[in-house]
Amino acid sequence: MNSVALPAIVGLSSGLLLFLLASGLTLTFGVMGIVNFAHGGFFMIGAYTAFELTSGDGGLGVAQFAMGVVAAAVVTAAIGLVLERLVFARLYATSPIYTLLATYALLLMAQGAVVMKWGRLPQSAPLPDGLSGSVDLGSLSVPVYNLVCIAVAAVVAVGLFAVVYRTRLGLEARAIAMDRSMASALGIRFRLVYAVLFTLGVFLAGLAGAMQAPLTQLTPSLAHAYVVMGFAIVVIGGLGSVTGTLVASLVVGVTNAFAVSFAPDISGYAVYAVLVVVLVVWPGGLLSRGAPVVDLH
Amino acid sequence: MSTFTERLRRHGGTIGLIVIVLLLDVLALSQAGGSVERQLFVGNVMIQVIFVGSVGYLYRIVGVASFGQAIFYGGAAYTVGLAAPHVGSSTLLLLIGVGAATIAAAVVGLFIFRVPGLSFAILTLALGESLFVLARRERWTGGDTGLFGFGAGRLFGLDISTPGAFVASMVVFTSLGMLLLWWLEYSRFGVVLRAIRSSDRRAAALGAGIRTYRYAGFVVAGAVSGVCGSLYALLWNLVSPDILQWSTSGDPIIMTLIGGMGSIVGPVIGCVAFLYLVDIASAITDQWELWVGTILLVVILAAPRGVVGLVDDAVSRVLRRKEEAHRVR
Image 1 (spheres, rainbow over the protein chains, first blue to last red):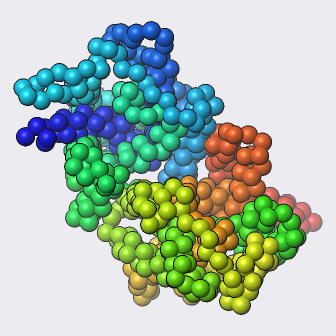
Image 2 (cartoon, each protein chain N blue to C red; image 1 turned 45 degrees about the vertical axis):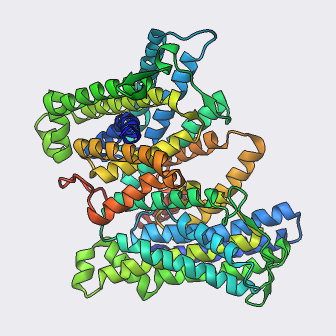
Image 3 (cartoon, chains in turn red, blue; image 1 turned 30 degrees about the vertical axis):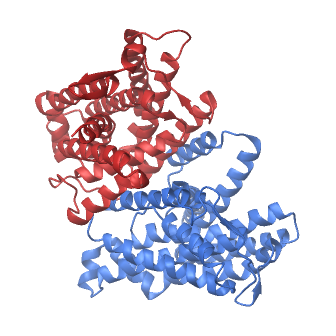
């Protein structure tokens, strides 16, 4: 029983963090039709910024750590907003293959910037003493930080669903996703919606990176690893569906955790195995609702 | 005057290709006697131009976006490495590598019609990544070190046993490879694919088997990638997991874009430009990602049609001015 419960909790924790990452990809893809490879770069910048802000001399308090994580997400979002104005705003009119390559260029630049600032060697971000222990749930000893991640990510995920389905911004975004020219004709300022949504997505990526930082080794290849993971999740979930992205994130997170516990030999392939199986059985992804199919040309 | 412009437009690709292949051949022959380091670099350029040409072909003519051509390129190279202890002939090794890549492309290609374009691209990326993980992890693939010592001898009768000899022989192989790419583009096969690309319904109405042609186009592009991967293994005499990394799939797309997506010469020009750029950048700085990324972004924002697009625009402008001058008179 316990041998199943622990990977399930760890998987839930990493799955929810993956959702924070992948939901931004789903929003930019579903609403703006942009295949944003730079998203992995934002995740990485969030992770390294949190590392920079939290790894000082002496003991690290829980409040200090929390502020570091939030500050890292805000810094990342600010970088995202600037890039939206400078680069992405020029890309909305061009063909998807060019936006893809432009965002790929940004990914390379983010990697280069990280190499310049922190080097290529792996770094590890610290956890505050208050979060590094375990707590006993019945006979099970669960790492506190995983529970914190579950709680925080779940709250943020609920907030995101509320934004998408319960606010005027979400309504306008969904209208744009359905038919941009019609939405625009009805007076929706799609450029503004794009900028807000994009920044929101980048904030979530930065937050996911900052929270993931203590759980992983920080290297400049983080950006690529996580953007591939994110896109795999978006594709598994059914392109452009936020609910599908949530389901897919949890499936991937839990599968990964179980693979690490029970079949470490194949754990590196878990995501790809899920991807191939899903695409063979449901070619459109788990929850595709006639989502926009972007032809990459 | 306009007929001249039209003719130039129609044959611009072919003329450009001939000029570039001749320049490459001169480059290869001039380097064949240089240092081993330069021989390996130029030999690599001679292989990459075909590989990138095949990726450009896949995007531009077949109309399939793949992020995983490393599967076929690296897969063929590893097949050569794994078969080398059992096979003496380099020619046979190359054929085995190409065979493996073709089979892989025939399997992966089945997904083209099943899943949406972006899903297919991500699927190929994921398959490439899992091969990368596999190659690094397993003992029989040599782990992080990879495989080495293939004892290259003669390829279709031409000496490739040393880097210098390889580069000299590549004059023949690269020229043939370019001829193949040219044929794939301008033959009936290429014309039908282009017709499908511009309007699949109209092409279907004219009687073209859309699925068969696109599938065949994808498999052919994979097979050409396999040729290049096998040549790579024979040139370097080693194969390491790096060859399966995402950059093997991603770089050719970047090169295609730098050169220009719109014509057959674009990928070739982009490839040569990119390889020299990275060569120079990595000699000067450790930060090549930053520089390559910046240059790429500038190219996309300033010249979305690449180097060929810039040349094309300039030529058109000159011709138009002449035409107008003519009319005024």
